Image (cartoon, rainbow, N blue to C red):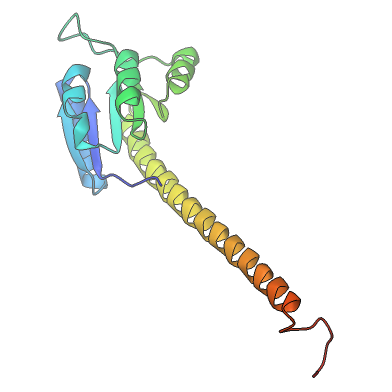
Length: 173
């Protein structure tokens, strides 16, 4: 069953953008938001179970030997496949977006004037998606229990009929 986790990690080597996104998401959602400059730093805290990670595609402007966003995405998915990762990038190339989705990203946001609005919408969509997963799981379990109950009822009727306790003839006998 998919749980709804209430933490967001922002991983971006641009501290101004990261803080602005943190402020925006903190105001617009009830999630606890943390910021990391490198993917490696984020990986150290992945055990805190974030629900969403906004991850910059390029992460090597501060530390030249830092892993890039795609490598961090793969590591995150190995450690915690349930966390939803949203890639942030200045690239407006469909090939890059498709590649990140293939590696397990939930969405891809191009940095620009609508990025914060899109990030807010992605948080809402992930929340809605997790809630639908929970409901689907509950309905599936309910259906299984109803099927088991029906099978038990049929077995009881057949047993009672074979034991002569009930008859297949209508009326009072």
